[in-house]
Amino acid sequence: MGKKKKRAELEPEPELVDDRETRNELDPANGDSNEKTKKKKKKKRDKQNDDASKEVPTVSIALPGSIIDNTQSYELATRLAGQLARAMTIFRIDEVVVFDNKRTSENDYRASAANKLDEDESGTTFLIRILRYLETPQYLRKALFPMHSSLRFVGLLPPLDAPHHLRKHEWAPYREGVTVKGRVPNSGGTLVDVGLSKDVLIDQVLEPGVRVTVAMGTNRNLDDDIPRHVVPSSKPKEESGMYWGYKVRYASNISSVFKDCSYKGGYDYLIGTSEHGDIINSSELALPAFRHLLIAFGGLAGLEESIEADDNLKGKKMREVFDSYFNTCPHQGSRTIRTEEAMFISLQYFQEPISRALLKS
Image (cartoon, rainbow, N blue to C red; front, side, top):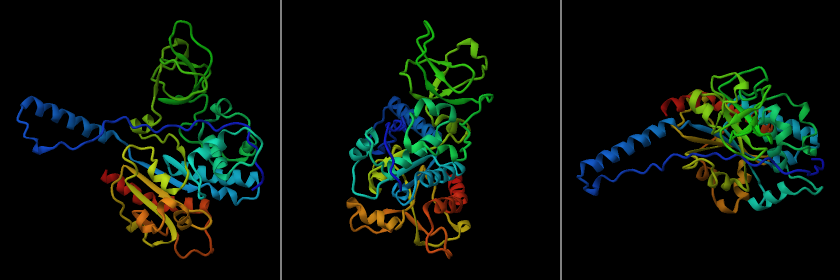
């Protein structure tokens, strides 16, 4: 791909936080006959069960950043990233993990992402930047993304039009916003630009330039200066099932995709995709109930190459790394299926099996 010059660092990576208590099983053999203690334990167990029921299952995607390196220009690379972002939004993907096929480290990536000198930008860094940019509501992009050569062609891409990409005239229970420098006297809070005609006040003191999810409430009068609350970005989905965009995470190799999972307890079901995988009709595929599902895609040489290139998985076979291993497009006419094509094909293939699995949760 053509040379890409770096002029600004990437938007800080959003955190996926699960602040539930650790769910430990109580030991029935402790011989505790104290009624008060038993009641406390029952209350704690009930609370843990309630918390578990509130946790919304998630679907994550993992793909190599090297797919960008095979493009011939900035424009083609941008269009490729745009296709991926559209697929993730259409199929309500919660998290995207972009991993390196090469032997590198998290520190190498961070140093590259923060370097403001004019030099080539890796495909991984480029892809992460574009994916984050497209997921961000249009009214926040100017504040969160300084001008950068990698963003020169993003205007050619179709909008994601995700539910959190609200128009100025639209009211919703939640809106994405960015904190601004202005302060309301004696308020003890912070003003946030949420894309409306007037900034809203939140009940926290935060630095300018921080992206937040704001619970707007039912009061539409922006002149009241009633403080609104900042909530986790997962809240809209947990409360009303609204799709609220995807998070983007970097992984230095495919094993780091699993090891550094952002969700408490990690991914509980891993799926690999490859032309060498099992062939099962989508209508007959039965996935187990899951909390955090991950679907991994390979690059030009397939997912197998990513496994072989990872020293942490030396000697491992695909079926040892993943719980399931599928060919989602058997009898293909082309010798190769590009990753952006595989994304649409596979996510459509998994749509009904995932829906059936969620009914078991």
